[in-house]
Amino acid sequence: MAILKQGHPCICLTDSVGARHSLKSDLENLAPAVLRFESISAMADAYGMDVSALTHTIQEYNEGVKQGTDKFGKPLREDLKGILEPPYYASRLWPKVHHCMGGLHINEHAQVMHVDGYPIAGLYAAGEITGGVHGGDRLGSVATLDCLSFGRIAARRV
Image 1 (tube, helix red, strand yellow):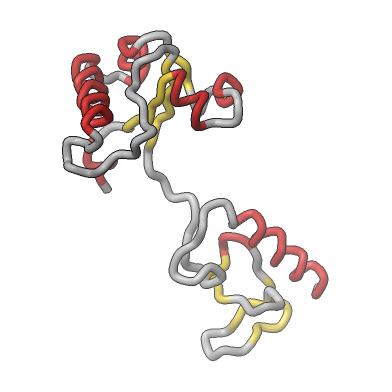
Image 2 (tube, helix red, strand yellow):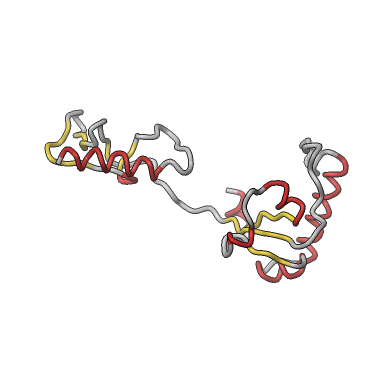
């Protein structure tokens, strides 16, 4: 993964204009996940980044916004604005395992299935110990409903 190859966390950031345009909530209430900075220098210091590299990256982005394409030639939306107006907001990005796609096979009754395809009497499972409920991939934020739904189903059968 690209972020892991960097060897350090990456950040996503916006300025006050981007925050007002994109978000419905007050970013001040999202700390410590989202931090506020009065300057790019303060942001670089907080994340242990080289301030000149961060400033250069922001300048490249701003130039791409003006031109309508980023430095890789990807078209940018016409309504984008440069990162220019403090305060700035940033959030650290760092990949982590948050859901396992494997696990025990269960049926619609939350019964754990034997490898030969029949339910194992008296054995139920729910949540992230189960596998296959989401198929080969899963949508973020749906694990809680999966846990609650199959937990309730299992509880009703015991």
